[in-house]
Length: 125
Figure 1 (tube, rainbow, N blue to C red):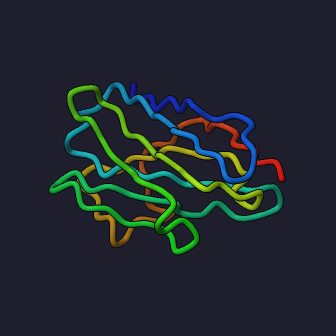
Figure 2: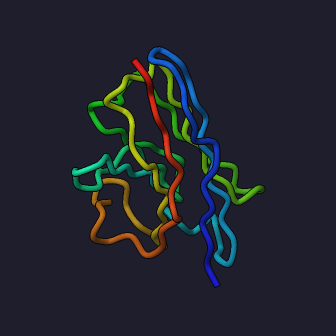
């Protein structure tokens, strides 16, 4: 059974940083494109960042470019999202997702195979 378990969320002041982690089990992690998505209250879920299974290439949403780094450790079956210079509008539940042999170019909420339950990030002003 595939499980994705996020951690690292919490309350942070504007301008602060957080590092989210997503531990995966039940799958061959190295074969999966991994992504972070977020959903704010009343909003649709949206892609934040993604990292390729093939070559480690990355993709970021425009609203986080320059403020976030996604990385993966295949030995630990874990993907990370380091977020800096956080803003109140970054407040959301952050979800980890996976798709076998997926492409970072075509990732969206409709085509991910597995999802975690999310971790809440709250940025206070």
